[in-house]
Length: 237
Image 1 (cartoon, rainbow, N blue to C red):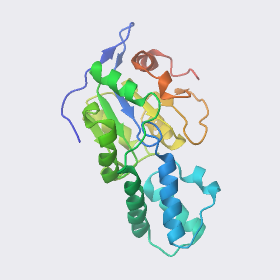
Image 2 (image 1 turned 120 degrees about the horizontal axis):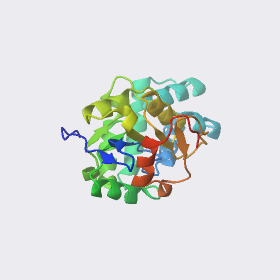
Image 3 (image 1 turned 90 degrees about the vertical axis):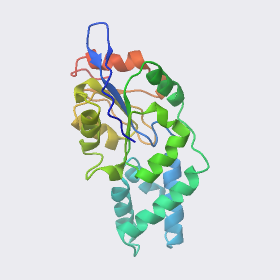
Image 4 (image 1 turned 90 degrees about the horizontal axis):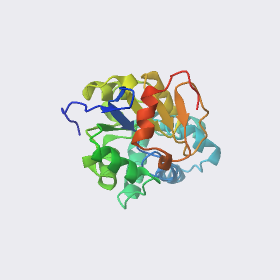
């Protein structure tokens, strides 16, 4: 889903402008990281392999191709990457068709951004079919733009998804706040030059220059996101 509507900046007290907000999907807005691991475990069990929990931290937050390729390598299963991707997507879709729980604070944040007409993009490494299915739970009206992992040649941790979102909304990356739950997504946002809010889900994310780490989306609101645009990029939070 895309839009040609130009970005509407929201101005802070000192005149700086938040031009857009970019939100990750899995683990950030919806509580589905466990769903992915369940789908992976189910598929590999069907292929005769029991996945060790140690692999979970490796595959979380990454694009399907990276996670699936890693699991093929560590298990030695005799299946191609395209074949495995089809099985994983099918197992995951079967779970989310029953509905997905939103992360604490997600609905409130989306409503606040919509009420203030802040251009908001959903930027995910998940496939388009999965993004579109989960939009039923989130409400497609909350997003000017959605980008899925298979919409681009390169997805996270490359900066391409966030650079593309900024370009399509007519915004400057440094004036766009990114909200992510994994180091893979945080890396993508930072590489694009965006101020990033990290809300760790499965694995910890350390503070760093230009990065703000919070415990929950319940700590994130519009004034908070506006403040990221005015703060020094040299600060560590």
